[in-house]
Amino acid sequence: MDMPWRETRTAVVTGASSGIGRATALRLYEEGYRILAIARRRERLEDLARMVNDPEMFAVLACDVSVDGDVLRVAEYVEREFAGKLTTLCNIAGGALGVEQVADAAFDKWEGMFRSNVIGAGRVTKALLPALEASGHGDVVFLTSTASQAAYEGGSGYNAAKAGEHMIASALRLELAGKPIRVIEIAPGLVRTEEFSLTRLGGDQAAADKVYEGVEKPLTADDVADVIAYSVNLPHHVNLDLVTLRPLAQAAQHKLIRTA
Image (cartoon, rainbow, N blue to C red; front, side, top):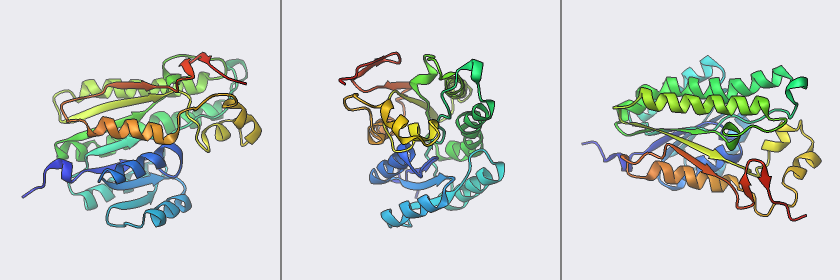
């Protein structure tokens, strides 16, 4: 006899080697999910697996979500190991590159952002939709950003990428109407993680630190993971279409309170 779905919950989490992806994988594991954590950086994933030390419930697989062959290996793993029990996909992989204005746009960075945030999320979702539907209780989570909701100077490429991912979630929700799959979008504002701004600013640690200077309690990766966990643990007839979360110090994309 099959166990009730809440007792056999399984999740694929992309971007799990750091930041919000890592926090989400760990939080869902703590909630009793069987986890497949995927990301490009194999060494970091292996370190995470060693830290958890529960190979039956927490597995890792190196995967670049922009590469067809890598995503195919994820789908094959899910078919083999989760056997129709994949309940949750968290599309966390993504990020920002650069702060150039349109007049100085670096389109190689734009292409990188579209590959990870838009095409990567779409590719993984397409590959795993059959397994999610087969479970009878599927969830697809897209981590977008408040950058998808309001433009700002120097954000055009990232604004466009996250707006594109938002539209994937919105269209998918309509396309899956009548099927047992929820589509959930989580859109954080200012989140301080170890790599987001550092990567965006080309490894300039001083510039990355300045992004958060004087801001009292930016969101953390754990804060966002808490919201993701809450959204997928609700009764399955309840769908949080879009959750926007910001730190108290950020009233809007353009209004951030700094104390110094």
